[in-house]
Image (cartoon, rainbow, N blue to C red; front, top):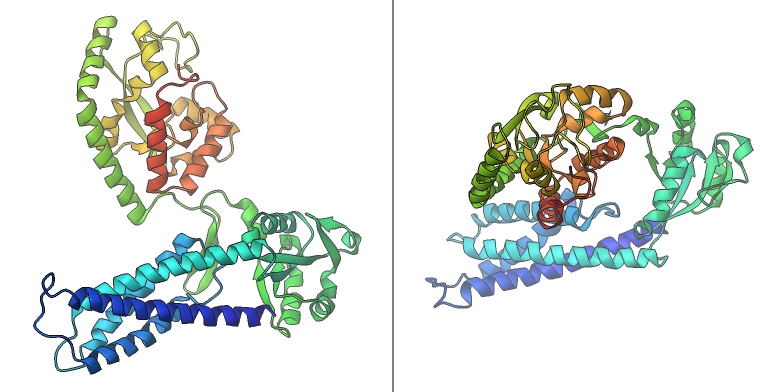
Length: 466
């Protein structure tokens, strides 16, 4: 039943795409040749030539969309993912059309018109796909267009799968039951779904019930059943997906990769890399330069005040640990009296006697952190990231807090996800680590902008800053 529905939806998608591509072709032609005063031309393309190019476009676009995978089920993809796929397919189709039109007619077909057509096709199809996805998701929430899944397993992993199915109703997945490894679990339930038999009953369940997809969520110790499961499923038309139990060991950026055609499960990987690292560095350079220029009068005034308020230098350099666990010298306005750490390093506390009156004010307002803009400009730090800590404290934390060292997979930041949620000063280090790792896994320039905006608006004053 699902496969018939899917074929109908695919046919509808192709028809809508063709309508939009046809409209975009007409729109591109009108923009290029509809106003001779705005965009002059020597002569209009021949009607026969225009018709041939239009027919060619009507073949190329669906063909390219299909090659990119835009007509496969896209339930798990976000609208942004789908728009990127449409962009990629439109760019390929546009270049292919330009190359093929070189051989049509005595003269080259208008490249300006083809560029406008490609842009309009991308915009039109993207909007149609986003609307179509939102409509389908709403229908699935109401119980239409469902895929019926059978979960193999009745333990922790199966529970996690079923909880996600219940949480994301927009995916349109309905669990028909679970099959456990042992007979003892039959008749019980997992996350509200009944255990209707054991793995040995798989063939009978697939024959007697409507099942579109089998989700294998067996613990690693029970994976010897997988061979028989695949033998049974190979005699049917159901989809089979495996939820690997090894993800319980994943720490950061867990996922699937390919190595020479061999699938590899990635349990831990480096943070922001490649073009993302370049984009983040450019972001830091632009904003740190702007902030330094804009705040230079304030920085100069604060330096004079610190120098005049107590003996000692205006700036204080302290060793901290940053990217890849390497130390660097972080710059701050001095907030403590000289010789404050004669008895060794210790955490600052509320009403700390080592702090000068001006220093207490600078800490409460976080103005003492502003010189770190120079660290950002030099590349030792980023505007946004986990706050750097001193080596002596890191040695303590990494022994008692799991995954603490993973914070050093990205550059340390002046502000971060943990800080804008009030995790500063004498607050839970464990919670800070969790927030920092969330930031690393979900990093984007938009998230950095959000954190910066909240820091500027609300983050300078904190009851936990001292």
